[in-house]
Image 1 (tube, one colour):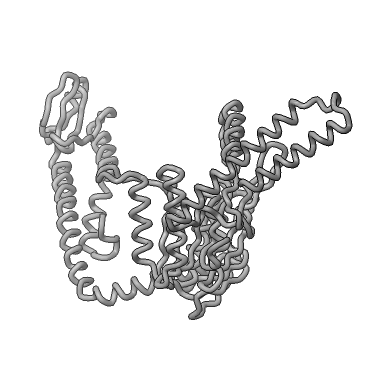
Image 2 (tube, helix red, strand yellow; image 1 turned 180 degrees about the horizontal axis):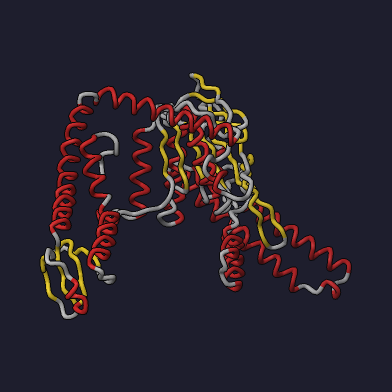
Length: 453
């Protein structure tokens, strides 16, 4: 049914006739039972014969002369009457008329409405706008959103920002975080910390707050001040398009290339784990170069949040003055870690990847072995001036880095020889003068090592 009752009187009459069928049949059945004296008489309907009166064979002698036989069954006979036939024709006619009349009325209404299309679309647009604004106002009231201060500047300053979705869906209280970005001093924030610590949530949170503010909404913050951004670029998540021959890493690089080729000084860039789709050295090299490019390219210098598990990237802040280090804080408790979800200044002192592996249920023997391997791999790679060797650009500087690495290794070998010599010496057997001579020899050897290396 597409036309409401009361719109057309003729349609209402047809519907009334159609709806009254059950009560009419019940009334007629009662009347025929009284008239014939057949208490088992029934009036039924099927699609083949329509409406019929059914009488058992034991009562055939009571059937009136005006009954018209329609069908003979094993235990009964089926009949019709002029009154029943007339009703059937009226009902079937009414159903057909309802369908035809409804369709014609629909065409008539559609024609009337089409003449008001422009006005109706404007009304719909205005109602939609009111619906959105009303929803945002209600949300701001319920979730304690604040009005952001919008200006023509370039900074993004957020105090106690929250993720508008996660703070609603999570049962635990959401931990708010501050954000400060500008193009003068705090252009790129390198964010390190453990997996599951909240880095990706933080990146998305800043983007959503910027979008809400620019569309005129209150935002989930204690206070916020920001200029407009022309675009928000994101490189977040991992996916592939194997159907067109694009691996996870290729998709990652295509998205990164799009950012580097299209970002402007008014853009906001969110980079999450750039380089994770390839080998460690390749990934680290690409991530490092991308950060340098965003810092040095005069046409861009866009405000950037760069979440990474490459802790080596924190060394960028030693050579590039607009890069700042932040990390997601955690608390160690016995042999476990507690995610505090708080973004604080400075680099993370470790990734806690092994702790996360333990939380995931990796066997204890694997976790212990991973700790041993990590201990052997984790060495600080700084040159004599305290600058990161990864920052070297020219072949001369790379040669210097290789020399320094070799020099350190050679020095360690010589010092290990002295250590072995000390361990082999039985001090309790030495006379005082011999002990002094032995100490003097060691001192001389160490001096030579330092002079050579």
